[in-house]
Length: 605
View 1: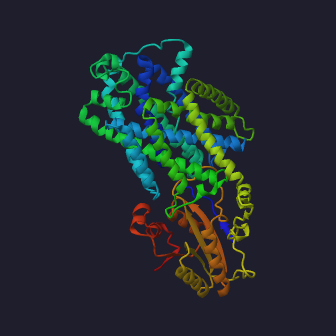
View 2 (view 1 turned 180 degrees about the vertical axis):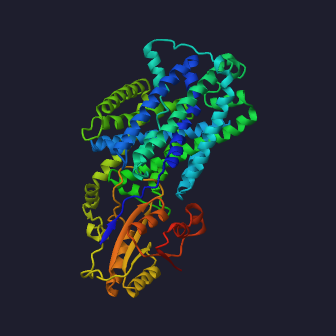
View 3 (view 1 turned 120 degrees about the horizontal axis):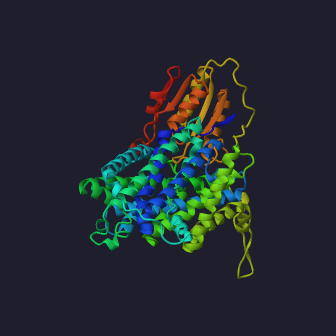
């Protein structure tokens, strides 16, 4: 018997909140300068309008997280309306994350004021991609520390600027209403990030609606309040200081490091240097989050057979290799090709607005969604507003539209390949005519190794479970033959039922619905189960197979041991090297510290 488990819910609000701030909160590091660059003294009014939109989007996504506790991102919600629409929404989100990584990396080195910032940015993206090859799981703690430090430093800057806020030179918007609308759409960058939190409701602790609210609202309120305070502080700085002595350059000289200028002016250069280092770390944390999300989206779509299977291949560290390579290389190419924060912001907006629009539109038009009438109406109005924003950006910035359509087109081509694999295989295996009038046969399909697609079929009927089994033993293994023999001998000696657990470690949180883990496509797990099945039949031991996909292996083992009420947990001494234990932690140690006292732990060395 094969039991396949769902992903364990591991994400708490104080984990998701810093992750959200790492994307949402970083926007102020470039939005302040861009707002002053585009709108000058009228920045406050445009920032206020963007804050209202931010609150509306935050509210809408708290509702979406309530509606879809097993995955509320655009891919999950839109697939209830149309699978093709869901794929397009996910690909628009990919475009967003590509530019998020490029923009955040570039601005990080502007804050550090290093020459050739685009080269440093490209190198940092590649370095982050290399580190993610090992699938480190401890970056969440670092992100929390950096996020908290950023909030503290921002509050210090805001507090120091408070006595000067009354001196802010606030101007009224100039030009026509259409001109103001165009300027507003150029600044609509701060709504990104909340989509990533919605995608991860499938691994949030229950109740998901509460966890999501606690993740979204504190971060959103901090961003709105501090953005307005810092905008006033920016408008209170004399123009000649903003322009490095030339008031005419006030709106352009520090477009890409405005928050550092505020720290220098209101506190001092030493504090500004330290704060800029923290700001750069936050921006690089956003790069890491964007790369991870890019990997997650591609892996999720491969899992759902919307991309070729190669996108789902994992390395020994649990990282999807091809998605990781693309997730690091594409932003690197983009930042080298477009080494300007303003131009990257234009590419950024069309992706995030498109993804959020598809999500909101799919939810509010879904008759099965449990929405109140006022919620449905408000989300529909918000979706229509974002549709207008998206078409404005597409019309005024055709290069941004071309970029987004390139990402979507490449993804749809990969989807077509995934859906037509059998047809392509038949074409590749067909006889090939040559110039000499003969035919060369490609290898026959029958020559391929058979795929194991289900629970291993025993050679003979499996023995009935022992009616008076005294114990239940759980063994977690990846195929250690000595551990397999020892577990079977122990189960036979104790007349116990043996539960065999195979945990497939995935180093990135998988987005989308929390579907049950599927062992049918895991050849390694099938091989282990088949090996156990044969040896169990020879010994007459009743055996049951368990399969789980988990981000935290130790927590998955603990959860399954407790939920199946086992008496003994059997683990093999780790065969991982010191690098694995450094990056991932020691599974045996984590299990031993948290295992309930009633469960006996045996370590087989």
